[in-house]
Amino acid sequence: MFRITSQPIDLAAVRSQLLDTGCGAYVQFEGWVRDHNEGQQVLRLEYEVYEPLAIREGQRILDEAIQCFGLRKVTAIHRSGMLELTDVAVIVGAASPHRGEAFDGCRYIIDQLKSRLPIWKKEHYANGMAEWVNCQRCAEAGHQHEQ
Image 1 (tube, rainbow, N blue to C red):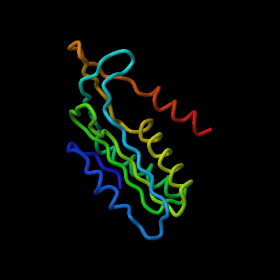
Image 2: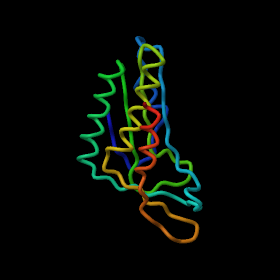
Image 3: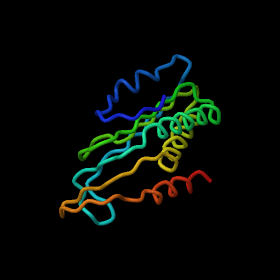
Image 4: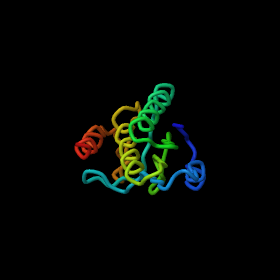
C-alpha cells in the first residue's frame, strides 16, 4: 500500500506489516533529510504533494513491482510538509521469498517514486534562503543503475 503522511513514519510498524512466513527476504529503504545539497547547508526540507495523483500513481508503482519481481508484500510511505534533519522523508519496504527479488523490487520502487510522483521538495538553507529544487537528476541517476 502506498501512503502520504504529514506525521513521522513508524519504522517498526512498517516492518511488522510486511512480515510473512513465506518470505525469506525483507529489504527496506529509508530516505533521510541531510544537512547539505550542492554546496548549500540545508536546515530542513518541505514537501508539497498533489495527493490524489500521488496515491494513485504510487499504488500503480507498487503493483508493477509485485508483478515484475514476484514480491509478496510491499509498502511505501512518503512524507509531506516540513521535515527536520534526519527525519525519514520516504520509506520503501519489499518482502519476497528470495533476496534478489526484494533488493531489485525495492530499488525499482524508489526509483519510480522519485521520477513519477507529483511531489515537490523545497530546501531551506542556513543563509535564510529557500528554493524548490529539481530532483529529476536524482531520479535519472537511479535509472542509470537499472541498465
